[in-house]
Image (cartoon, rainbow, N blue to C red):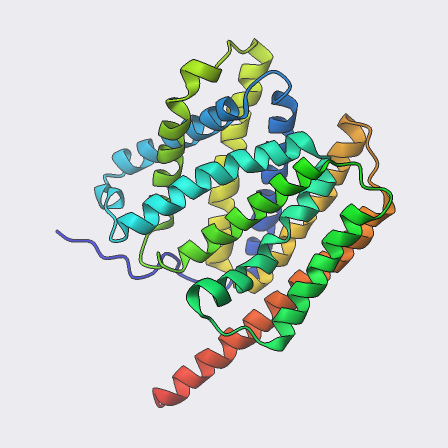
Length: 308
C-alpha cells in the first residue's frame, strides 16, 4: 500500500481555536527559551539542545510506531529535509546562545527580524518578486533594529546582537526551505528535525556534558516538553486558520519575555527597546498584510483561469 500526502495541512476555519493554540505555542516557546537561559549558567548550550531533542523525539517515535503510520518515516524530499534538520539544529543552539548573551526582551525583538528577512531571501535566492511596499517595510523594520541597539537603553553586547541576527537569518532560511517541502507531513519534518538534532548534539555530549542536579534535570526535560508541545500547537493552529491570522500572535512572546526579564533577572527594558519593537512589529505586520493580499490575488487569478 502506498501513501501520498499532497498537502501538510487540511484547513478548517476555526479561528478562535487557532488563536488559542497559537497563544499557547508562543508562550511555551518563550518559556523554553527562559529555561535555556537559566540552564546555560551550569550547562553547555549543546547539552541543553540535546535534552530538548531527546525529550521531543521519543513521543514522536512512539506515536508513529503505536499508530503504525510507518509511511511517516518516508520522505520525497530527503535533501531539503536534511538541510532543514541541520540548519534547524544550529538555529536552535544559536537561539539559546542569543538568549544567554542578551536580555530576553531584546533578543525576542531581534529574532522578529526573521519575518523581514524571509521576503529578502526569497528575492535573492528564489528570484521571487518583492514589490516596493515590502522592500520599504523591510528597510523600516531594520531601522527599528538600529533604534534598539543604537540608542541609550540597550544593555546587550555586539556579540549578542550578531548571534541573535544570525539566528533570525537561520529562522528565515528554515521558513524558506518549507516552501520546497509542501508534500511532506509536519510529523515527518518535525521527527527528522529532532532526530538529527539529537544525533548532532549527541556526538558532542562526551566533551560537553555534565551531571545535572535533580532540579536542572527537571528543567532540561521541561525544555523538551515545552518545545514539543509548542510545535504541535503551532502546527494545529495553522491547520485551523490562515497563517495571516496566527503569525501576528507571535508578538505576544515579547510580553512574556519582558515579564521574565523583570521577574527573574530584574531587568527592565529601556524605552529604545519598546520603540524599536513597535517599528519592527509594525513592519512585520505590513509584510504579512502584503503577503496575504498577494496570495489572495493569486488565488483569485487561478480561479478565473480555471473558469470558477
